[in-house]
Image (cartoon, rainbow, N blue to C red; front, side, top):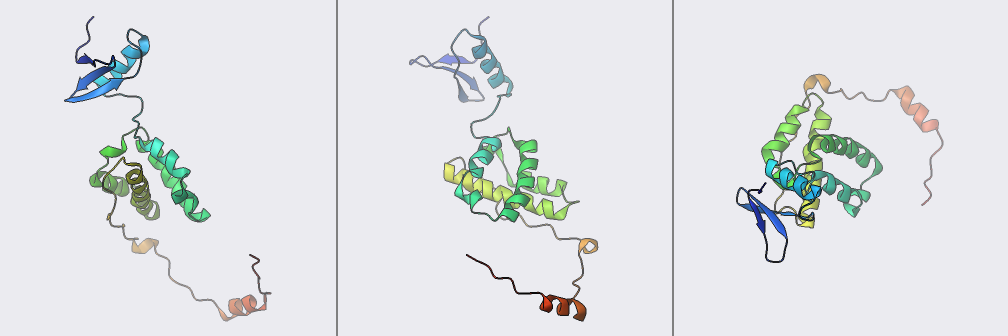
Length: 177
């Protein structure tokens, strides 16, 4: 059966034309892998984009941008990365819009701190994508934080005189560099 939208470059490489764009088929002609790639391209179910979120997160985790973060910050961001990996890991980074960032933030509004970490982490990831040449602008930048509801805010409680006295009795801690 002849495949539609298939075009062979004079060099011998095969391409599939979808919505005016050519997508290269890397597999050898007349193999099951060739057919699989062809149908994945036509149906839009390509296994993983080269510029996927998973690939970006993997690259970001070994960069100095990540390793220079403090351990506690990395621990908090790791939770967000796990969430993002689960939700958008296979998607293409280039398809992110500001509305997507806001939608993800609002979907987690029941846990405000985590919801506010989502745009923060996406800003960092998009900056890394800009460095790699995957994006030209950062769609996550400038998304406002959700305010913490009054019922979740904790009042400041000053130390009692007894707590101050106990603290002062403890020996001083010296840090060795």
